Image (cartoon, rainbow, N blue to C red; front, side):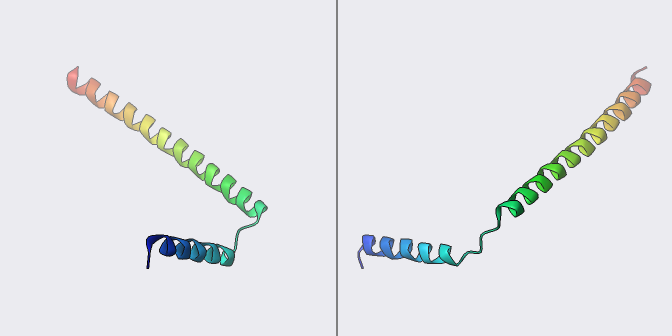
Length: 67
């Protein structure tokens, strides 16, 4: 079988497979996108607080050790 026949068959199979996909609705996509963005923002804020606390602890520790 020549390569272009294999390519055409592959592309036809891809097209057939994409017809079988159950695509999410627009409101579902928006809802999940907002959920992901909020989750990232909350985790980023928590990590910022942990970093800020760690910075204060290390600053106090070095101040005591170094005089």
